[in-house]
Amino acid sequence: MLGLTAKRKNSIAMLLLWMSAASILLVLCSIIIYVFYRGSHELGIEFLTGQPENAWLDGGVFPAIIGTLYVVFIALLFATPLGVGAATYLTQYTKEGITTKIIRVGSDSLNAIPSIVFGLFGLALFLYYLKMRPSILAAGLTLGFMILPTIIRTTEVAIKAVPGCEIEGSYALGATKLQTITGVILPTALPGIITGVILGLGRAAGETAPILWLASFWPPITPLSPADPFNSLTTTLYFLTSEAQTEKYVARAFAIASILLFMVLVLNYFARALNNRLSANIRR
Amino acid sequence: MKHENTERIVRAALFLCAISAALILLFIVSFLFKEALPYLSHGDLAGFITGTKWRPSDNIYGAGIFIAGSIITTFGALLIAGPLGVACAVFLSEVAPKKVATLVRPAIELLAGIPSVVYGLFAIVVIVGLLQRDAGKIFTGEALPTGKGILTASLILGLMVLPIVISISQDAIASVPRIYREGSYALGSTKWQTIQKVIIPGAMPGIAAGLILGVGRAIGETMAVVLVLGNVGMIPSSIIGLESRGETLTSAIMLEMSYASVGSMHYAALFTLGLVLFFMAFVLSMTSDYMLGKRRRN
Image 1: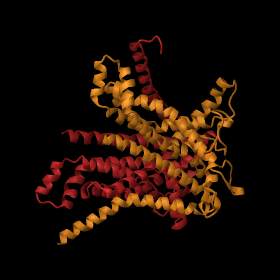
Image 2: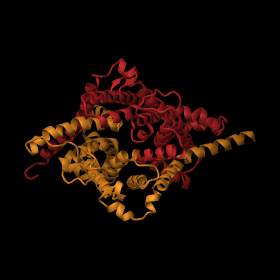
Image 3: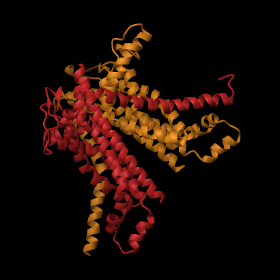
Image 4: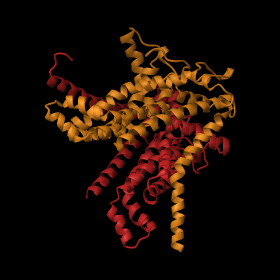
């Protein structure tokens, strides 16, 4: 940049830096506004609570909403106790060494696996080896495997943030290790653990690739038992989008996308609120 | 005595929880291997990786086109997410007033939370449409035959990996010692000179780790890519138009798995694609972790 003074260059660079952030905000806002705008034509009470008709082209998407909630519930039911247990072990029961290293590498690598590989695994394990039907249980467990590392990591961070004096105080009063964990450490770490659960929930609810082969497009069934076949919002959205070429398909796909986006916004809000409370607690 | 027993049982149970992630990982890898075995034992792994013909009906499996497709789209994503992500990270940690930063940060978290299939829908309706109608007019004077292809895929993938690039770059920038900055300002440098000469070089290993992690995410992304890349078994040779379409490892698995019959060579070959994908993601993630870990120790 010949002929430009340092000051001049500085102003140009600052402008570009501001623009980088502004462009990201702009893109995010346009995605959100566009999705809600296009989705608003189909969205309504009937869409949220009705049964689908005509290969999801008419009626509501109630079974898919229940499918998503149910699958995510199973995933959390599997991953939360395991993840909290793992984090408790890592922070309270061992010193850093070869075992913890193996555990951490395992958890980090699990986190790095592409979602479609979980899909392959779920397909081979549940459908071909265990001879299960495509069902809520199979999909829930597959997603549970996927979000386990998230829960382990966030819980570990939350436990490490528990003030040492509180733990020592508990021991000083004669509490056993178990009593200290259940009475002091986990309750204090709870907001952080919940944040992790919310993160896992959001990720599980938004995934498509791991569960696509485990979903059953038609006929739609509102799942009652974990062994029932299901459709989730994401799998239905994918089916509509990949078939789609009429306006009707697109409009309905955007309506489902609006529900998903709304969920993401609400979950983000809660995670943020909890996080703020947590850091406020620590500052105190 | 009873009490000691309880503690022992709890300890054992928690240990089982702790190794569960590693066990699941082991389980996944062995399942992939097991299902891929009929193809792997059949031989020619070099031909699998370099071959450019994929015709399951003739028993020809050259995954080279998919590997190339994955690498090209990921590279495109990096071209977008790299500069923009690092710029945004610098902005957030060095330039932005506090109020602005507290507005931008949640926005980036939101970006990370949007489901990939929603990105795919947005891309197929908005970006593909724009590209086909309007970009065609700019480049060739008329509408393009298609808006699908590597440009659309790279744009949407770039957007999807931005949050991870930003967050890791920000950590890296924050870890550059304060004294360096102050030294630079004390010598009369402008903010940009400090950023360019002190902060970015100092944070470079961390930024590189973030970019590598971003590459790992982009290579494993399925839903958005499958919707916008066109899914034609060829290596893209243009940025726009029909020649820019292609197929990645992820989209090939997604599209073909539903009609490959269990136990067939096709089925095993698709699991081999899964293995290739797994190892790429694994190596990228390990490299990134290693770089970040080394940094932390320093």
